[in-house]
Image (cartoon, rainbow, N blue to C red; front, side, top):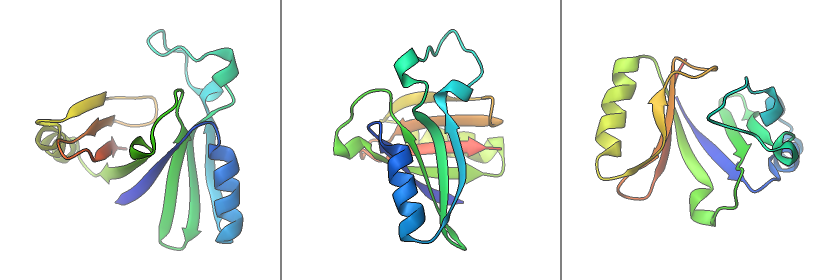
Length: 134
C-alpha cells in the first residue's frame, strides 16, 4: 500500500483538521511526540511534546493521507515522502537496499515500537521513501 506522507513545520494538526473538513473525511489517528516510549537516543524537548508524531486522515473510502511535524525546519522539497507498507521484512529489505544505493538514509530500517521494521531514506533521485512492515 502506498500513501503520501506530508511533513509539516509545526502545523500538522491544523492542516489535518482542515483536510478532514475539506473532504468530509475522518481523522483516524493523531499521535503526539509526548506519547512515544522513552528513548535515550531520541530526546523530545518540552516545547516539542505537543507536536504530531503521526497522523492519518481518510479523505475517501480508498484514500488516506499521513503526516507529522518535523522537529526542525525544512525546505518545501523535503516535505513529502512516499510511505510504503510492505507485507514482509524480505520485500522491505530488498527495496531498501536498492533505493538506498547512491542515496542517503534518514532513519535506518529497524524494529520500532509501532512496526516490525520502519525506516526512511532519500534515493539518488531526491525522492524520500518511508518503509513500514507491521
